[in-house]
Length: 149
Image 1: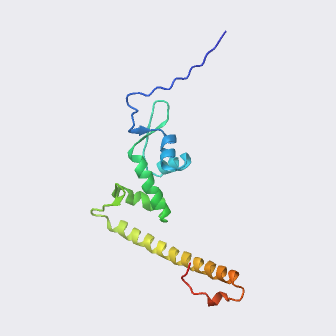
Image 2: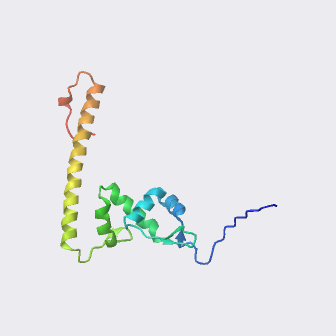
């Protein structure tokens, strides 16, 4: 008995350019599929399930993922991003009537990031002093001005 397995890829009427699977979203945003699943689990992005179980994402998720990545790169944890993400429209902050607890939380996060920046600058300055001393063995690390990259 001869068995044939035929796989046909059909683009249905409901799958236009406004929708994509997780692989396409990953490719378009430079984000791994695993991270996209995590963002979905955290409530940062939403998909619908196709009859075959595949995730189906709207086009808006491309910009949403880029916003999430930018906020993560800025040092915000996902719990904070989840709170402010609804306030983001086309990549800009538009906050109307933000709850006081959200404002207080963002102030704490801003202060935490500011402290992290101070620490990073101190580390950068120490590396700069070390490199200057390594380039000129007669120099003393203490002689190199702080704040110069």
